Image (tube, rainbow, N blue to C red; front, side):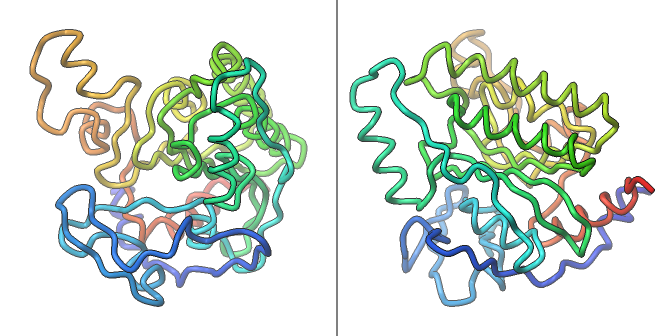
Length: 286
């Protein structure tokens, strides 16, 4: 019955953020192909507002940049970014890694694969973090882990709830062990947040895999998934090849994970802002 309460919520008109120097989309495309059904979607002005970048044929949610996600969720003009100048180096001198970082920064307008800060949803203050899949598949390197950890620590310090939108291919291989260490660091920060009593809502988008799933993304007090999102540690193909067995239909998709207790609810993109505002209001500390 509680789930029905959230399903009836109507979505609010999305907020357009004014963030100078930040690209809303990695590139201006006249058409996008749906990764699920193959439908060609023609992009028109205002398409984000009208359709939330969801395929009209199969209802599959297409990729959003971090700035698009913030625009859909937060009140207009409320976002204040944290650690905007932090960027990765090449501590292991991995070949061509620096070139890849430069290309990602130029195409996205971001310094790293996660944007953190604070803002409001229907005037409710919160800390927020959003991973951007267009920046090296939102892989978690040392700077991504550090920014997420700082956001969690700020939520404790300011006694605010925190929402983190995860979308990642896992650890960033170019940083080796330094990347893997972020799993422990972010998990420890979540434990500190839990001890303080602040609410942590984890939103899993497509895909959320690898070390991100194995750390902070699975530690939320409330875990929400977008429809059809791929959620797991290793991908289905790798698992099939390892165990040499055919996996069930829909394995690791959000609907499968809901049935098996890994997520608490699946919320369509058009309903997400209103759902989050109700959850924040229900858990607001007086």
